[in-house]
Picture 1 (cartoon, helix red, strand yellow):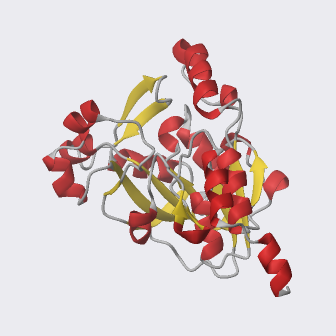
Picture 2 (picture 1 turned 180 degrees about the vertical axis):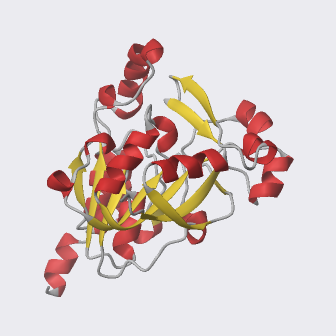
Length: 281
C-alpha cells in the first residue's frame, strides 16, 4: 500500500471521535486509533491477563455474544487466522422474561436504537479489522452453519440466557479445540457453598438476567454440557466503564469492602474457565 493510499484510508482523530459519538450506546471499552477509547459500560482491558488465554496464533476462533466486539478484536490481535463473531442485533429476539418483555423492548429502542451492532461495525471499520460478524443465536450454532473452531470464547453471556446448558452444548458442537468461559458468578453462594452446585433464578427483565450460579454451579453447567475443565482462574472483577449509568445503590450492596478484598477491585465478579470437549462415548 502506498503512503498516499494509507493516508487516505486512515481516519483522522476528528473522524474517530465523530464515529464514536454516533453510536448511541457502547457496551465495551475499546481502544481505537489516535489514543481514543469508546465510552463503554464495561472495561475488560484491565482483566485481560486473568482470562487464561491460550496461544491463538493461526487458529480459527469464535466469539459468542460479541456485542461491540472487544473479545473478537482481541483474538485477532493475538494472532488468530480467522475470527467469527456472533450475536443477535434484534433485541426483541433476546431471552427477555415475559413479564417485562414489552417494557424492555421500548427501553432498549431508546438506548441503543432498533438494533445493536453499530458499535461493532464502527470499531471494525476504525480498526481495519477482518473479523466476520454473523447474525446468529448461540442456540443455533451448528457445524453446518458456522463450521468448527480451534478456540471459542463466551464472555458474560450465560447469566442472560434462559437455557445456559443448551447454549453450552451448542458451543461444544462447533468446538474442536478449546473453549473459554468467562462469566458471572455469585460470590455469596460461592463462599457459603463452595462444593454445592447452585444457580439462583433471577428473572429480572430490566437487566435481562436469568441465572446467578456459584462457582460450583458454573463448573457443573460446563461439565454437564460436555466439556472437560482443564484450568480455572481465581475470581476477578470486571470494572464498570465510563459510560455505565451511576450505580450508587448497587455499590452499597455489591461493591463493598468484602468484595473488593476478594476480587482486588470494584466490579462484577467473574471467573475464567478453560476447557476442552469431553469424549462422550
